[in-house]
Length: 337
Image 1 (tube, helix red, strand yellow):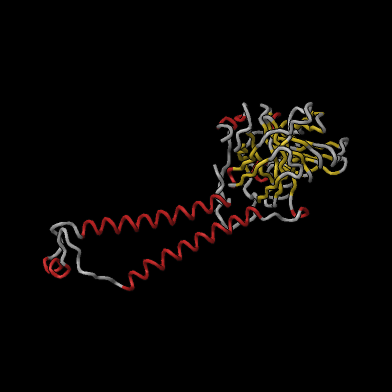
Image 2 (cartoon, one colour):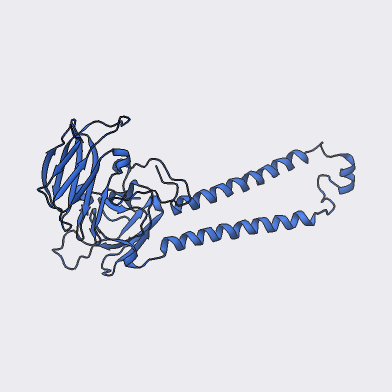
């Protein structure tokens, strides 16, 4: 379900509202005129006064105030909508300083996306909804799975800790509703994932640390992960998957995030790349598409972007616009456009 507070959707809603309002007024006025001035309805005195008859022009009659209103009101509306459009365009294309943004390099290949992290990110599912909280500091890992009486989820029983691709499984102390491990050290330079499951292997909670230099790929079913309520800068590059031919520099792609109404080309051979900036605030999973035909398997250039809260933070920043309650996407919903 698309978020309601993105630049694209806000502008769309405003234009749609005023388009419907103007349409109702225009067609309403037209139908009133059709009914009011249909044959046989006009009083005889008006027919004689204004020479209203078939085949002749009526006597000139006008209302200066009404005519001025017909010019002034549409002009104000057009100027206002133009200002909204220009303001949203500025918001999308203003590139903040690197130190103020979360930076990821996006590489388009045939036919998948790669995401190279230039900043680290530690994130966790919202403990307020999962009733699970991970605390990993130094050599002590604590996973609190305490579930209050009104908790609706199943009981957490197993924890998997994956560090740099190596997995280790642990069992939760069901009596204490807690897992404590003192023999595992948190290294900020390694990609680490902690997942919590119930007895039926249903995923209950995820905690993840992405270090600088981490690479995720849609070829492996991985998502682009971006923190909420922060400006994100994506540097976009087109690269060949097969580097055996130095003369081949790749193909044209277009990285498209429909949720935020932003799209940018990836130009083969352009070493400096192109840039996209946006600021997501709703947590959820949203689609990534390629909007430029890039070869035989163009339809495979699909993926997902996860908007998450940094560890210890939430995605509750008030933007002044109502947020959506649920978000979902489906990789089978179609490929490039």
